[in-house]
Amino acid sequence: MAATLGGLFGGVGLFLLGMALLTDGLKLAAGGTLSELLSRGTDTPLRAVAAGAGVTALVQSSSAVTVATIGFVNAGLLRLAPAIWVVIGSNLGTTMTGWIVALLGIKLDVATGALPAIGLGMLLRLSGERARRGAWGQALAGFGLLFLGIAVLQETFAEIGQRTDLAAWIRPGALGVLTACAAGFALTVLMQSSSAAIAVTLTAAAGGALPLEPAAAIVIGANLGTTATAVLATLGATPNARRVASAHVLFNLVTGLIALAGLPVMLRAVALAQDGLDLGHDLPTTLALFHTAFNLLGVVVVLPWSRRLAALLSRRFRTQEEDLARPRHLDATLREVPALAVQGLAEELRRLHELAVTTALTALTLAEPPSDSLAARRAAVHQLAATIREFVAELNRAELPARVAALLPDALRATQHAEDVAELAATPLVLRDLDPATEAPLAERAEAVTDAARAALAATVTEPFDPGTLASCEAAIERSYAELKAALLEAASAHRLRVARMDRLIRAAGALRHGAERALKSARRLHRFVAHAAGTPTTSAVSTQSSTSPAVPARP
Image 1 (cartoon, rainbow, N blue to C red):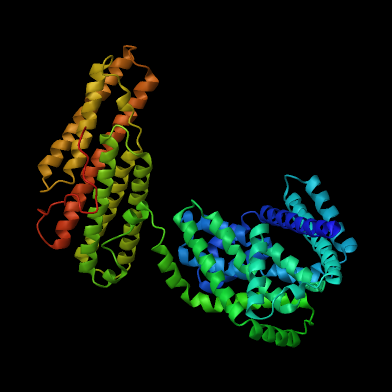
Image 2: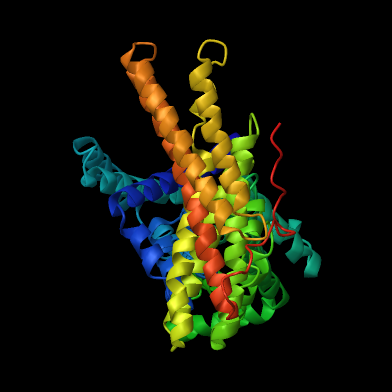
């Protein structure tokens, strides 16, 4: 018994070690090729599924492909719908492990195949650790270890099959199938690898320890078990990671339910396919074909619904940043009617301007503004600005009336100005470092610059729109900045202030002036855009804070 258990654990350990070395080696050897394939080969559902399947079959790790896909979605290189297609394809690609075990692993002579591969692989690894051949050597050694593990498992299960009738422990009927499925799920969770669980199942079947139907149910359970890994990987993760993982879970659940419900029929269909393809009737090949068949059936069933699934998941796990960044007045249908499109664009520009200004005011007003909240709001400004630019670009491709086309440059410039204003929230407020007790004149002038910037920002979200007020604010910020700069230069020349500190203070004051001026320019362009969009003289007001924008914080 001890020898049998040792062989079982040792075989699984060799297989998992081989898989890890193979996966890591192939990822290193392939360099950026796999990433490029995932990011570029996803423009249609079928190409994305093929990319996911191909990359997974190559690196032998659906988890690695899923993690890479999540990274592309977070970086904005891949939208959610193509990411779901890639994940669906990765489930299909992971069935390659079963074919490797069935067609090569069980039939390969360890002495003539696996052991030489390990030796040659390690030779390449040691002779070129920092070169690409070292990565290929690591992959080759992992390949050999994988087959060595299969050989140990095969020998162990052959002994188990001779000594123990595992089939007698499996209850007949639906209860037995569900029990076997649960066992496959548990194996995958324990080993954190569906490939290892399937390899164990196929070698057990080859050794006569498992009959066909329970082995097939274990394969289904192993396929479902990969969802546990996905769920664990997304604890505390980003919303995009949770959405991709949810798609992975839903696909595997649907696929598993289809396979369980039609298990007898599918096994008969697989037997017919084996006859037609002349694959023989050994149990490992049957199980490998069954694994591929029900995943392929899952792709056929789920793929037509993937866009709706992406739309459903995009509404889940939302963050404050995503809620703020979601456009509320823009819609693809508006592009058909230019007048309505311009009105919707005007309302969205107002939202963007108000969000940017209130974000900057929060940073300038509070002594210690909440950095996480401000970072999320800044990111929301940039995301909403990108959406507005995309809408303008789509609108510009259509035939527009001359009046509407003339408005679009103002919309784009106002969008850019709003982004510049939001960046005030990331500007270090080093002007507050001046000590009012020992540096009173400088501290007063620095406070004057901050007050002028706050006043200019607040004026841009106050109605009625008053060009005179904006001009006064602009003059005040210029005057206060010039006075502070002159005082700082004089203090540095008199050696009362270090030059490096003077430079930091001037840069901080310049950033405040720049942000305030951009807010004023944004307000003027927005006012002009709104007025022209409505076809009225330029007396329209820039709206005050909307119900979705936070109130401008009062100065403490």
